Length: 310
Image 1 (tube, one colour):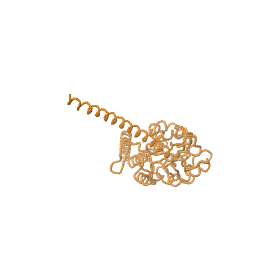
Image 2 (image 1 turned 30 degrees about the vertical axis):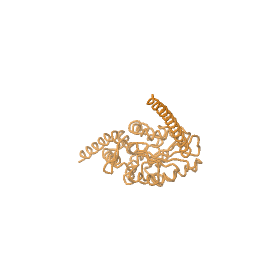
Image 3 (image 1 turned 45 degrees about the horizontal axis):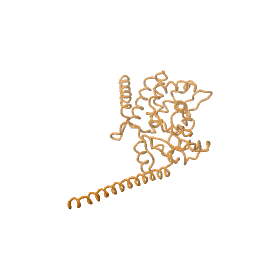
Image 4 (image 1 turned 120 degrees about the horizontal axis):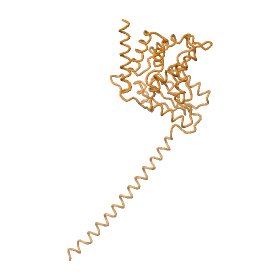
């Protein structure tokens, strides 16, 4: 009996300690949960939802080539014109090589882009603007619609859903850019303007291509005309050539960035998004899966055409 008397209090004491431990653990868990909720609320307060719904003084500006669309619009446009016999096989070879290079490098080289624009201007010279607009609609369906990056398209839609205007800003012809913007449900487009007289292309540009600093000037002018606050606006691009435009706004995004833009964006703590399915290798990259087949086909076609010429 003495032994039992000695054991009973100890058992009761152990039970009491267990209850106390359980209650303490529960209280600590509840306290931790409340602190976590409080931290989330503070974070949300510090980083308000973006884009801001109903902010009419904010807008979004999207580069086109390799940001909204895989590849360069002017190259796809050239393929469509060749299909319609606007130019000969010699020019197609040139376009094919330019497209292959662009997809391999994933960046805009001013010399290549200028060469492509000169080719396009010589091709459309003498044609009516209305004719090219009609053909452009067909070319979009044939070569461009399936090359839109879904991730970038979703970003643009977020701005539209917030009640903001969304503009394409590109070195591509303004007619082509306008078609793409309309097909995507965007507000409009800023692009390179080709001179026309009485509705017929002359083969010359009005001013210079909308590239690099020219894009920034176009955005600045549009913001002034629209009464926008650039500090509340966003801009999206893949190329370091667009750093002037990205630097104008309060919310710059690097999308599928080239090496120089990625480095610049990280240094300035800009947000990055990469929708390519593969990483770059040996300092050059192409979008894996979707890109490899198209690249191979374009390159093989170019080589075959080159050999035939010889």
